Image 1 (tube, chains in turn green, cyan):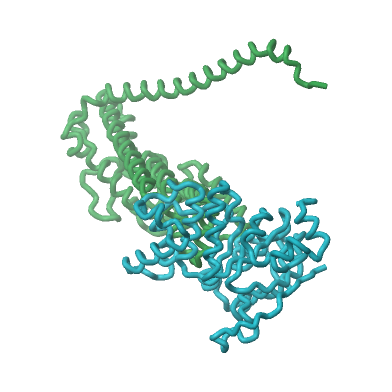
Image 2: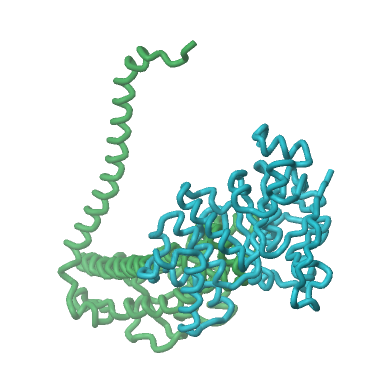
Length: 292
Length: 274
């Protein structure tokens, strides 16, 4: 006895095709909606802020007069903060990921730790701000310095980097590890010569995306008390500083209409900053992939 | 029921008679080996004496423990977390399970070729030079020599000599597998373990690997796991038949395939199961 009635199949073909096309349309609309909102946002910010982008905007400090307001303190402050976040979070994050994936035994305790690191990635940033305030600003008496903010931001993005690196490491085929062990390589030789080179594009992608998040985060900086009006450039890691999102936040909440445009100009700078970082990620990734 | 027909000791005198005196060119002597994956008893009281400069084939149906056994010979099986073993494997007078036996040292003497070709995503040169480099050879000239010698040894030098710095992934599956054999030769091993090396290859590449195995046995002892009984019959000197984690029969390949002494071997050879 046959189970497929071919007449019936033909009869239902029309509705199946309609459903097929409907879903394609829905998914296309979803993509279009995201792209469109991004384009509108981009247009609004650029059209509002472009008038304030000038050489002076990059060289002036903050000011009460919108025309004189500049972003140099925030830009340089953000760069300093990056210089702390990038090494701290990458070394700790990749190190933890290597430990969890390559060394830690598969048991209940380690499963629990793995699960909680993933959960940690979902903790609101303001909570990390409070953690930073308690530990770095007060207990370690770093004050509201670059170091305190950088450490706080590193903690914030650490779970994301760990999870991304773990996934990249896990994606390295076990056959490659076997090949290496099979020739008498030690665990560290296998990790450094086989696992990491294969995992590095994934680690860098995750790492740089996490760094972008740290650059754009505002809440932890507010909580640890980063000032907005800074009339000097930081000269060491314990200096006071301000950062791009803090500066934008401050401009945006000022009553004068003109400061809204200054804020938009600040956002343009921040977006350029992130764009450059992401491009660097892409370039590094392609360079590493070409070597294989 | 374990039945092992140890071959008669050969009369050939070894020149280095102070070494290996008691074992007449036996390279691997397995004694009462048991292995468990968790609670699963995968290898049961294995006794096998494998001679040097021979090709020893291990055949048997899927899940009989043949791959597990060959991976135990270089302790690769320990990469599986829940593995427990008992018994001894004597490799060149030392028990490989001794607590002071470094697996890295063992695996430098015992090369391995895997089921699926697994070159590194690096250039052909870097693939072959990987082993020598991890063992501390940095000199460019020495590496060049090793790479050429290994590739010639694996009969693939002529095919790749002009593209040594291209990615090994650009080669065909059969070429990749011979690159992997060359990579194993580059650590100048004593024994080469092959775990179904041709199961992912087309017939022509399979033939090339089989011919290569014949050449390699002049200088190396080869232990090869295979699903393919014709392959075992073609290339091996001795054959061990595994079933459910036990060695059912171990003898000259000719004997196994013409007059097996165990009914189960005969059934398997003649295709009645497996």
